[in-house]
Image (tube, rainbow, N blue to C red):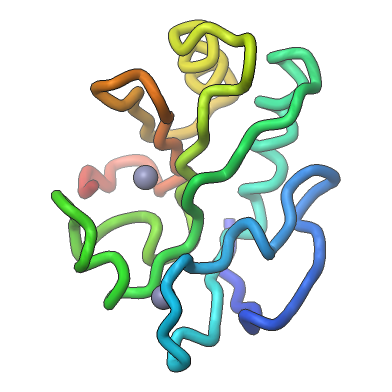
Length: 133
Ligand SMILES: [Zn+2]
Ligand SMILES: [Zn+2]
C-alpha cells in the first residue's frame, strides 16, 4: 500500500478498468496539477467489478485536492480522498444498491458506506485503525 503521485495531464491505467483520469480531482483550479493514488486501489476495484459480474462502475470522485475537498459539504481534512485511497462509485445500472454495497464489503475495503439516498458508495483502503472520514 503505497501512495503515488501522477501529473494531472497523465493518462494511464491503475488496473484493467480503472484509469488515472478517473482519479483526477474534479476542480478547475490551474494549481491543482497533481493526483495522488494508492497503488493497490486498482486491485480492490477489479475484484469488486468481477464479483458484480464484470459490468462498468462509474467513479464519481477519486482524488480531491484540499481546496476542492473543503468546498464539499461535510468534508473532513482527514478525508481519504485527499491521499488517493478513496473512491465514490455510482450504483451500476441494473444492480440493487444493497447488493452493490455488500459486494464492496466483501472485497475488503477497510472503510465504506452507502449514501443516505442509496445513490453512491464510498469505499477506501485506509490503514486499519484510522478512524477519520
Ligand atoms: Zn483540485
Ligand atoms: Zn467518498
